[in-house]
Image (tube, rainbow, N blue to C red; front, side, top):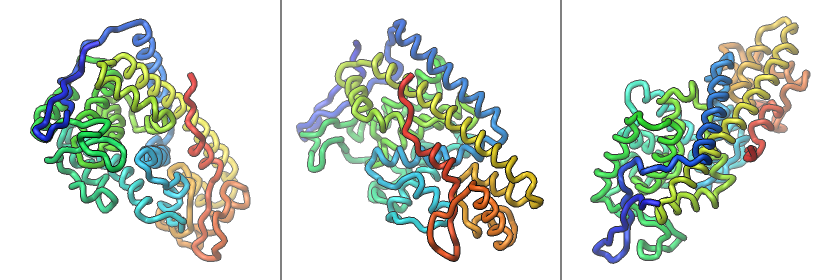
Length: 378
């Protein structure tokens, strides 16, 4: 195994790690070749599902919300998917506004990044713009949103110092060089896309260019890369569920690259995550689409087009309110309320609170599909 960088001694006496430019030398063993083939097959199936869906951009929204919740959970935020979706629909939820804002910012940052890719390639500037939106108005805003750090940071238990930290990333003076090298690597096209983004994800986390939010930005970059390379037509694949469910192994594999140059086992882990989460996303998307098709048939003979239009809204968010439906569809609040009540009478949605006004309803069958734990077994 080749070392992926060097530990340098700071004048303060601690050791910081500076990763070498990518790519490393890789030995294409049978296991690694199979893992790449398996991941390519699975993500290709997901891409096909995304192209087959009647409106993949609508169905993408709850998947984005799910990723936001799971990615933020890794960082300690406790908001649930149901709470985020309910709040987005205008319902009152029992969760701190700051927790909800942190998760909502992830959605904002991802959607911004997808749009920005039309005019800007994946680069350091784009990561700064994403970071600014991710950290705006939440815990960590003291960490200078959108700015590359100019002081040393480190990873460790609360109260640790660079001398006692688990990991110390490159000193500020090294950041321009290592980030420039990473940007050039991302613009290269000589490696299979899934291998390239697997290597780049490690490198970004090793560089840790921001004072806070590096984990979330690093996970966002995976999704943005897959869209930029047209590996996926729309962002349906998210690895936070896999990383969160296998958190100990995730950090162990990253650490083994830094300390031992163990790229092979990191890539095996990463590619397995891509394969399993691709299969999981296909399964969820298919089951949600089947449920929506079933409901469309149920409401087809009701005489009013509004219930069917509300069903279409459920694809983007299983929570609805009369005010929200009125605003989205451009119909009167009374019309929206009648349509929702008809869906409730068919068992498609159920009321989630005891309020007499501004009631919130949820298509629980869709929420249950989204909230199921990730399937990790092949």
